[in-house]
Length: 254
Length: 254
DNA sequence: CCGGCCGTAGTGGTCGGACCACATTGGTGA
DNA sequence: TCACCAATGTGGTCCGACCACTACGGCCGG
Image (cartoon, rainbow over all chains, first blue to last red; front, side, top):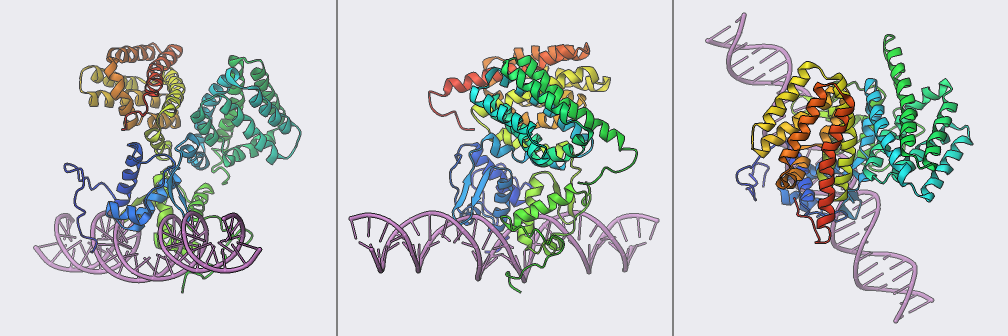
C-alpha cells in the first residue's frame, strides 16, 4: 500500500479537515483524546506502531507528534517500556515556561519581570496567611544558608529555593509552577551576573529579611509589599540596563 | 558507513555530554544557538539535511527536534521554503500556554482562573491609565457587539476580543499573551457552557459595563477592582461546581 | 520450594533512502 | 515587457531495518 490511499473517514463526515500536516493532526488527535478523558493521567498509550496504524500515518510522523507532546510535558516516553500520559500537573505542563524566559531578551525580559512581580507579590501575600510552621522553617533554612556564604552559585540556589518554598506555601501549585519558570536557573543567572556586581547583596538580604518578617508576623499586606519591592528593584535595574546600553548597540550575547 | 561511527568532535572537547537521546541533544543545541545569539529572530536555518549532518545525526532525529521546537513556537517550518526562527515575541512563545488550559481540569482550572484574576486585574488597571482613544473605541465596539446578539458563539468571540484589547492596552505584551492563553477558546467555551446556563448573562454585561466605565474614567483602582470581581465571579462559580459534583463521581467529559 | 540468573519478546530510539508536495527562481516565448 | 513554465531546492511523508533498553517468564542452582 503506497502513500496515496485516502484514509477513509472514521467519524467526522462533515469535516475531513485535511488541516496542515498529518503530524499536526496526530498531535491534535492525541490532545483531544486526553481532553475528552479517553486517556487518563498516568495511563499507558498503545505502541508507536499501533498508534500510527490507528491514525493511518507512518511511524515517523507519529514519532514526531509524540516527541512534540513530550516536550510539552503532556506525554512521557520510557525507552523499552512504553509511552505514558503524565500526571498533567502544573509542574509537568508549565516546565516549558522556562524556555520563554531563556529565550527572551531586551525589553521582553522587563515585561517578564513585571509579570513575576505581580504573581510573586500575590503569592507571598497568600503565603503569609497560609504558611505552615514546617514550611516557615524551610524558608528560614534557605534564608540562613543564603546569608552564610559568598559563593554566588550557592546564594542563587538558596535564593531560588527561598522563593519557591514561599510560592508553594501560597497553596496555588499552578502559580508556583509559573513562578518557577519565570525564575528558571539560566534566567536568574543571566540577570544576577550584572546585578550583584553593583553591590546589591546587602539590599537583597534586607529585602529577604523583610519578606521573612512579614511571613512570621502573618501580615499579608506587608508580605505583598515586600515581595513587590524586592522584584521591583531588579526590574528597575534591568530596565535601566536596557535603556543604558541601547545607544551603544548590542547587548553582550549570552 | 553504519551508525556506529563516532562523529568526530567539532568544538566542545571537554563535554561530549551524551545526555539522553540525540534528539534531545539537537533540541538543546538549537536552543543554545538562539540563546547565544548565533541565530537571530527571523533568520533562516540551514536545511534539515545540513543540520542533521552538522550535528552528526540522522534527518529523522533532526526532524523530531525541529518539530518539537516548532510546537514550542521557537521555530517555524515553511514547506518548500525553509526553517526560520520566529520573532521570539511573547505571542510566539506563549502560544503553548493554551495547551495547559485545555488539558487542565478540576481543581487546577480554579487555580488557573486565580492566576488569571490576578493578571487580568493588573492589566485592566494599567489599561485604565494607558489606553488610547483608538483602543478604547475598539473596546466599545466589542462591548456593543456583545450586547447586541444572542448567539453564544459570537458573544464568546467578542468577549475574548474585549479582554484582549484591554490587555494589549496595558502595554505589556507578555502579560497579554499569557492572558490570551488562559482565556483560550476551548477553555472559555468549556466554562461558559455551564456558566451561562445559570443566567449569568446579565451579570456579565453589568460587569463588562463597569470595567468599561472605569476605563473611560481613567480610574485604575476602579478598573482593577471591576476586573478582579468579574473573573472572581466565574472563579467562585467554578469552585462551587467542582465541589458540588465531586461526591457524585466524575465530571462530564468534554 | 525458593530465589537469582538469563534468554526472549516487545518497545522506544536511530538510521538511511526513497519519493511527494510546495515555493522559489530563472529562462522562455508570446 | 510580461505571463507562463520548467527546473531546482526544501520541507513532508513513508518504509524497512536495526540498536538499546525494559519487562517478563522460564530455567537452574541452592
